Image (cartoon, rainbow over all chains, first blue to last red; front, side, top):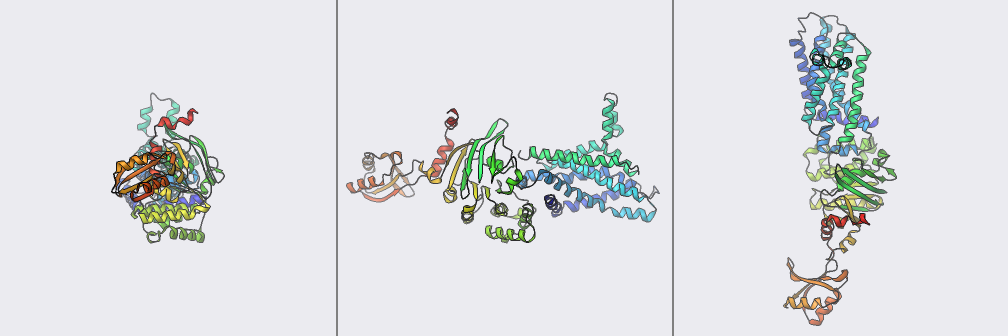
Length: 244
Length: 320
């Protein structure tokens, strides 16, 4: 636990020693604002809720989360510090969890900084704050699942650009899995169970259910289990690929 | 304190390390020699638990690196090849991170960091990002990191690479000072370093351990060992050469001309001591001797001889 905290702190601080942290936060807030007000018609809808705000999160994350996760392991492998890091007396799980938590907490900070939206809707009307809290939690969990995917991909390459592109592609598949486009491709030839399974893995479906106020513990649980599964895969991949 | 048992590493069809075994007791500085790609770094990576061996294992202070990796890694201080360190951190932050991971906090951590900073002389760059440091300083930060927890086993992959001659001298002094209560392995390309700091040397090539002896013993295998360098003023060299060859202890004699001037190099039969015989001969013939010196073995000769020997020869032990 102590080691997780030490690794977490090192990783977390390293986001802020480069401009990455500031660029990320500024762009995340600016794009979230623009999408909500101009594309999401926040005012014209005449409703005091944050649905247009949360609706764009999966798409924002698709571009921004890979930028956070790409360096996690690829940078260590490229610079050779992974050899130093993994010959310290730490467990692989501590290393994987410490790094992941640093990225996830950073994403959490960026998300928390959108609080002015929440204040705004409360000034304009009487939104269902319970749903907003649930949506924030859901959004953070979805970011976590995407980061876990990204960490896993980052462990498989030395090249951060490849890590970014592959993570974005995998994240896209998970995000849109349940959309009519994907299902249309499968219909007619794929067995029923496969179509069912593909619908089930969709991040978009589960997240929009949460933001609409349909709170099902299984949707939250899904994101948590995705995090755990990809972090396990991450640990295995690091072990296999570290010395290549 | 450190025991390597039959380490083998295959990378696909390539055999990088082939059945390497040795023991390093406390008080020993083991020089790890070999051409590039001989398997030195791979062996070190296996000892420190970074790479899993195909077979065999390393026992560090009684802990098997495969079975008890955490306990084993606690006993090791390791400078990996190229001295990697997080470029965005300063040495102070970096050493602080290592201290925390090694289980030191607060005052204890500060004391330990202070001690290695003074020992390795990195105080003046303590608060500059590591990416801005010179190669020599980076190397020293890497060594400082390995010494922080005062480990019983120290494994340094090219600790003096990139250091200037003064810094090299300093680093060797530091290694020599730590020798009594540690088991130390250093890998190096510098044979003079082996003679300066190592109490034992291992030569590996093609993944095989080809020699394991003290530097002096290795040097004795050189044909230059106990050879006599002779320079005579105003005499016919070929005549002297002929006289020398008549001595029973002399195997061969050749004329050489180098920075020291012209002279003869007389090689003994079976490494025998022949300087007395040569001196007697010179006295009997009243040669005007301007130089008479016993040569010591040259480690680089031995190194070249051992590492460039045909592979078939080196694999003889297998057939036996």
